[in-house]
Amino acid sequence: NAGVTQTPKFQVLKTGQSMTLQCAQDMNHEYMSWYRQDPGMGLRLIHYSVGAGITDQGEVPNGYNVSRSTTEDFPLRLLSAAPSQTSVYFCASSYVSGGNSPLHFGNGTRLTVT
Amino acid sequence: GESVGLHLPTLSVQEGDNSIINCAYSNSASDYFIWYKQESGKGPQFIIDIRSNMDKRQGQRVTVLLNKTVKHLSLQIAATQPGDSAVYFCAENYTGGFKTIFGAGTRLFVKA
Image 1 (tube, rainbow over the protein chains, first blue to last red):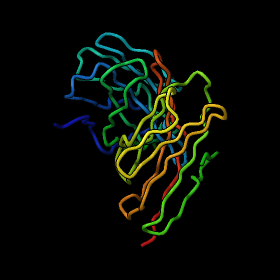
Image 2: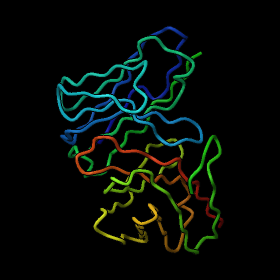
Image 3: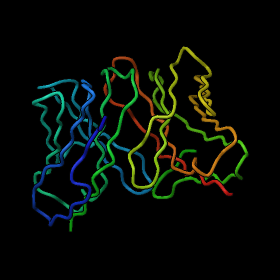
Image 4: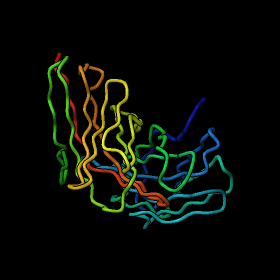
């Protein structure tokens, strides 16, 4: 099984550009989420989804949009990139929502905004 | 080990020794706790979890201890190996909750 797949692995953007980070899982997990990881810090939740058609905000949602049209895919959109969004982004999924099962992570997208 | 700012606390142990990594959690309502291991260039990987109705849970070479009175979690790794070198995160959630919250992490360095 591929698990959670994130693309691209690396991306460089100029301030003001937009882009979409892709995330797909093949485990039929109902819950998916996006985290960002900054140096020396833990992971901070950006957005999450408890099923197709349902999304909600996490701790740091500003500047990001998400949608969940299928169970498998959960893309993260940066509308107008800013240097403060330079980070490593991780997508994660779990079998059930409601805080009762561990997250499965992709290997991340390293984003630099200049 | 909790950390503030840019510098992760680091635990350095000799190969073959036992390691103990500590974590203080913040939400009294949390009832589900997870430990993750993150190797360089990879996403966090699930190690072991524990629910609040337990004080201790053992896996293969790992044990998690939960002290709800002082909101403290620890991960014990027996006979630490070089492959255990990584950053370890504790995380918390609660039944019905949709936001798993992570601690800042502890870097484990194993000396051969």
